[in-house]
Length: 418
Image (tube, rainbow, N blue to C red; front, top):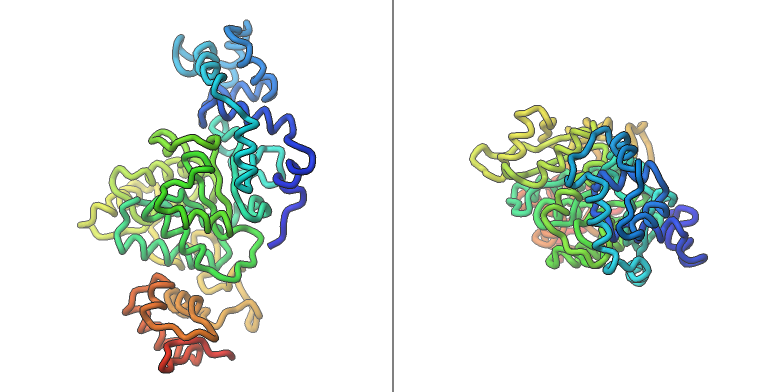
């Protein structure tokens, strides 16, 4: 994969951290994400000026409160969280605990760094959040070029942590099909639907698109791969994609940080898909942010008897989400022809980018992608690697054999070279 010129990691290693980066790293340790007051102040002054103001104990500039009210479009009530004096007080309480140099060193030690709006890989689409935009993003990626993704080819897939087999299978098939079209899959790294989406994106071999296969946005510090049970999965995301957090290293994820994080997942992508969600699932919060941002939202229906689908049904019934029941319908929402080869809107006959399984059911393509030309595999192994049920696996293998694409011998199944 090509690397964007002057990646953040290289620039920091070469000349040290820039003043703008240091200021934002310091502010990030004092200000919680989605703090409208801080964002409004940064429209009135530079990060360096705001940091200097916070460090001046008990100082509240005259007239700044009035300018702040004009910037936010509202007059905060005295002693409210948006009141300038109250905001400065809460930020100043964190000064003794802030150490931007240690935070930056921690991330460099982990092969990551801090991304700011002055860096080439900054996701400009986050500006749509207005005063809710992040100050900066802490990142980890084996290939820093993965920080420069294409927002037009990015889809968020979210849902319940206690996903059913149905939810996991639907998610895997959707995410893998979109990945084959060259779309980056964004999610939160949690158990259930998030993990299924990431695994599907990572199951694609030979990724040759300029954007990464998958992106994780954590609610806690990027130095703590949470949840612990997904540690290996998140390490794979770092190895092949990108991992972000808007809170400094060392910060523990909490309920309000998960809710804050959801707005970033929504803003990152042109389409948010909720594949399975309970009536009060946090995934509905992500969908709500996407609607507010004017992004497309889709939801997958499930059984009317399943509590795990109550949330997706609620989205569809309210008109907040488009109903989709197949990868082809998701592609249609994205303006991609269902049978088009990866990364294209359409293909001419004889296009060398066409795949042998184009036009076949998605699960058959998933089987084809895990099969090898040299190493035979049993149906059970193929089913486990592809995420396709054993019954669909057996049917799909017969289809591939009938097309002359796969062959079975005593050792198992393998691909046939054309």
